[in-house]
Structures are given as structure tokens and as C-alpha cells.
Length: 466
Picture 1 (cartoon, helix red, strand yellow):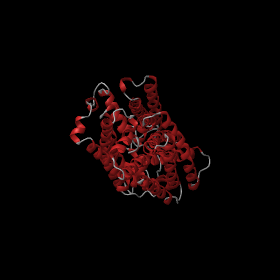
Picture 2 (cartoon, rainbow, N blue to C red):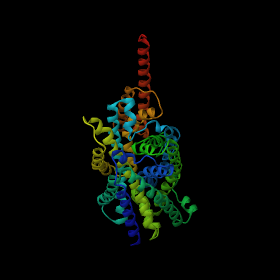
Picture 3 (cartoon, rainbow, N blue to C red):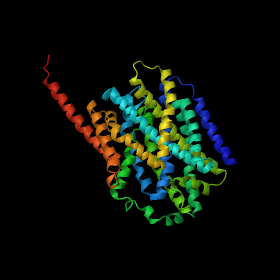
């Protein structure tokens, strides 16, 4: 009974925070709020955004099945956040007034490139949101005994309400609360689980040898390197994380918030992976996607478990709200607005953004129902970003001189290669298609950009002066 009261109180607080942010001046506030956040707020909201169902329950499930290869590969994501903090965040204020990826892309590549970017942004946001929806269904199913689809409906209703009503302001407020809850809850589950198994020595001694191998029959060196690159590149500068760069007070606080988020992510990935190994020792016959919830059920005492469950729900909701908000922003700002003949007012854009949450929710639900493991959903969603948009986006953010043709070369070559490698060739040698696709995207971009710029320079040189 105490646990149910704690969880209910948590959900009420989340709903209240969303409702208290309902008075928005227009679409820009929905997208990036007042854009004056300090480094601690950015640290909390960014960390809460990427530590979602895939990197927690999904990581525990994969470690339960395959061992420490997954949490170690996830360190590629930590490296990515640090690289963004060092090289991209200091330059982000070079794009004043931007609220979306398309705002950054259009000046360099044109309006059509903006629309294409917006379409890919919606797809990857829907895919990653689908991972969170799937995790919500599993959490409510395990802890409250409701059917999986009912659990999805409950979780979605809460997230959709506060993110739709309050936009980015509500997302940041709830993310800050949710981050501190998960920062308490996950380490608590880990330490109680170790204690339940008889201490650290007993825990380590009972880990199957195969689960401690990084390179082996299940995961050869090339496959591990591919997996590391998946997490290094897969979510780099996806719309919600780019938005976190745009809401900072200045470049220095933005970089600092990103840097510390990258530092904190590494031990979190290791701890959630270790919880998967704890679940393996508690019940080796368990369905792997239930690893994290099962450890909570077995080792956390009544009274504390309500707080921990609230923390686990927080992990998923904090990521879901960010990707839901970002998808709506991308759809309105980068697809609907450029396609319209007459401009939309701020209020009209805000109304449409709130309505488009339902569309993204439908796409996300299809991902959640088609792919059972939440980490697998994430990897599938990555196909829509790194092989297509990432290379042209990074080039602009780093201040390169680019030509529009390079964007299309990267999208066509990278996207086409990913499809052929993943679905035509079935990922030879265990190498993920989007890793190969991203490499081809980079190659096509560099060759096209260099050749087109040289042609332009020759043409300009032939033009007579005067």
C-alpha cells in the first residue's frame, strides 16, 4: 500500500509540473522554452533524456543474455556526449534563433534539405519513443499486474499530457525531478542486489565466464567494434539532444552541462548492466526483458520499492517526453511550415505541435509492437539518422564550407547502403548496416563537397573582372 501511495504521488507531481507550465507564449516556447538555462539544468535534462528504457531496462536485458559486451559498448555513447561537449557545444550560439535541426541545415543546404531532415528527425524520434513506450508497458505489467497494452496506455497518457500541455518548460521541470529519482533508485537497486547475493565476491564468482567475455564466439572483435560505433554515432545530435544545446544561457554552460552528462553516463551504463547479471543469478530462467524489474521485486524492501519504482518509471518517462516534444517540433518547424504557402503564426504553430503529438505516438507504438527488446528498437531507429543526416549536420555545426549537393549525396549513399547491408545482405560479420552506411555517407559527402567546391572555384576564376 505504501508503495502504491508513493508512485501515485509521484505521478500526480509530474502531472502538476506539466500543468503549471501550460501558459506558453507560442511555438518557440514550446520548442526551447526561454532558452536561458544554466549548466546544472542542462546536465539534468540531457542525462534524463538519454537514460531511457533502452539504456536501462534494455541494457540490463542484453547483459542478462549476452554479458558485459553491451554496457561496455554503450561507453561509445558516453564518448559521443563528451565529443559534442568539446567540439560542438562551444559553437552552438553561431545559430541564433534556431529551434530545430532544420533551422541549422536550411541556410547551407536549402529548403528541400530542411524538409528531408525534418522527415528523418520525426522517424528517429518515433523509433526511440517506441523503445520507451515498450519499456513503460513492461514496467507497469511487472509492478502492477496490468496487461502490457494497458501499461503502455497508462504511461503514454501521463507523458502525452504534460509534454503536450507544457512543452519544453514542462519537459525540463519533470526531467530534473526524474533525474534525481533515477540517480537514487538505480544505485540503490544495485547495492541491495549485491547484498542479497552475499556480497561483491559472491556476485563476481557466480558470473558465468561467457558473460565476462568481451570478444568471443558470440561477439567477435569486428562485431564489438561495430556495436561500439552504433552507440557512438546512433544518437549523435538527434533532435532532443540538439535542443538541449539550444536552451542554454551561453555556450560555456551548454558545454559544461554536456560534459558532466557524458561523465555520469559511463558508471550508469555499467551499473544497469550489472543489474542484468544480478537478475541472471536470481533467476536464470527469467525472460530477459524483465531483468531490471525482477531485481527490484526481489531485493528492494516494501517502503523503499515505491521510491525505486518511481525512479524506474522516471527513467523511461524522461526520455519519452523529450523525444515526443522533439518530434512535434521537427514536424511543424521543418516539414509543415516549409510546405505551406502561407506562414503560420506562433499560436497556430503551437496548436499544430500539440496535435502532432498524437501522430508521433502512433508511429512510436508501431515500433514498440513490432520489436520486443527496447535496445533493439533503438538500434533499428538509428538507421534513420546517422547514415543520412548526421554527416551533413556535423559539417555545418563545425563551420565547414559546404554545397547543397553534398547533402543529397550523403543521404542517398548512406541510406541506400544501410538498407542493402542490413536487409539485402543481412549484416555480414555481425556489422550493423548503419555503421557501414554512415561510413559511405561520410565518403560520399566529402567527395561531392570537394569536387563541387572545386568546380565552383574554377567557374569563378574564369569570370572576367570588371
